[in-house]
Image (cartoon, rainbow, N blue to C red; front, side, top):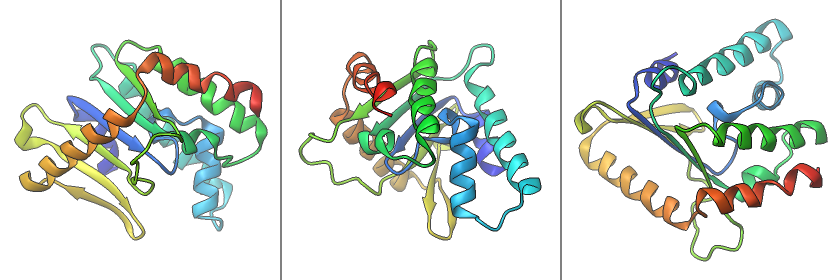
Length: 184
């Protein structure tokens, strides 16, 4: 709920995805596969509401005057089959559809970029109305952590710029994604 509130109130959203497709870009089947993997004991009665909540969170991308959303994904995120081939085919298609929205930018860091040591780097940077209200959410083995100290925020802004600088521009990123629709 904290993350949903953070997404809702953000004036800008920047995300780095190196392990999974970021939540706001996930399809229902992809989200279901992720939740089921990390919590295999969940009965459908608990799994379905989690998936539905994740999909409702994505509404922030479609509301009137939505805040900018920039997602930088490592190519491995697009190549990893979290479920079957159908899910692996429909997920990139959903990313492409969302990348066509005027407020959504998707950029991909390709496998062949030198110097990318961020395989474990995932973060969600929520920009506030003023920089002092910015917050970063990071996934950790024990759950999410939220960062709001200015020195750490500066470090996270620098990290995002560095990763974004390694990524392809939006057009070439879409060109990299398109063949995946046929591969799977």
